[in-house]
Image (cartoon, rainbow, N blue to C red):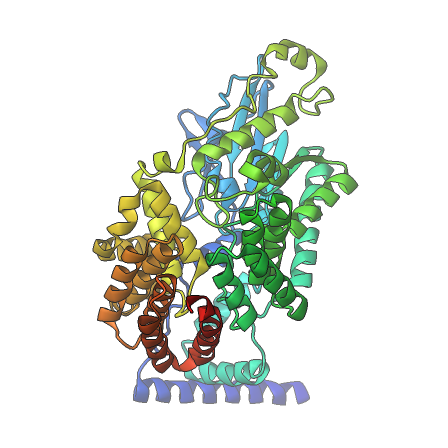
Length: 574
């Protein structure tokens, strides 16, 4: 009887909900569901639940072909693996993906074997998503899997239940569920930032994912090589603004005044007094580099990378890779050390990296060299003694004496130029503060070709189109109205780039153009203040610092600090 009553009650409630929903839909019309899924959302959360490869009959044989939406161009390979084939998969994020075609390694390089290298690096993938790829690849008879993972550990949630997600998405079309969901969400997350990160847990999760990848591969009797990731010491600058602190602003100005020892003293004191020491280490490293103390510069650049805790590899992540390699007894290619040893003064920079973590394509030759060295080791796990003897003459084929193109040569390739212009433009408009990432990119453009930077004023529409074409950048960034309102920030950053290179006339020109667009934007006035400080024009300096102060509003403390610092430094004018 009780069961019957409960059933009747459920039916009555269900009918009431349907009646109420019908009334609301009739009165107010269907709910307009905002399409939350940006292309990257689908790529990062939905596509990971389906296989990367599917088996099809093609060219009179069965092949495995990629079926992912945005990266369909992965190498196809035969479903039947011949006995003489060494099948090698490369997995990881965008750094692995950039190794699109190990260009220096022909398939018949190893005498008596066919080397089949298949790159399945997935841009934007963290270690959790790489782990899913690794599990699938074990179905395809791999002999060796090379793992390059360490960027992108920023996902607040690694994955989710796709069935629950689809059901939730469907139900949000109904008033009764939509209102209930909003109330529950508000009460549950009222005082919580769902994207807040715990760096200790992030690192622990990263270690667990990499260890799972290794153990799952080993269980199948497949060889694995772990790789640390190369780090751009000078270019791994956080998107976070420089802290509003008098000491760090003073340290920056002292470096520009070439008072390096004074800057070191100020910045070291800053680091002692604060936990937010990302830029303290960064500017301290720049000061040490100027006095040719490269060991201290390198050390502090790496401290800065670690403190940034951003979307790129860090020394601590690379140390986890080394430890796992040792503990799980698997091969290691220490790319971080290889690139550091290759760089001038052992400090990696824009000569190797196109941005904060991605390499110029030509530098993947160093990956090729390191991989072949590992394969051809005397105690090789991948080749037997007979194979090694057959290939003895080839073991030194890939020399370490690698001479890559210069930045000017990179600047002759339009794809490279567009890449840097896109980065520079985006970093300039990310927020209303000074962006060190934008300045770094604009200086790279200048070094590639000075004319590129001076002509940026004419490339407004080109920059917007580059942002529009980049699927990792939100649509707001390239929206014409929003972009037009942000154009002043790009002009300012070009001016500031010139100022820091001591090209003061060019700097003033761009600052003036930014002010002409918006005369209440404080940063160009600050830029002009620092130009006139360098020119020892106290009158114009004071006019512009006061104008910056009147425009700054939320940034008034920053400008006030600059005013106090400049008043103190101006004593050398008298």
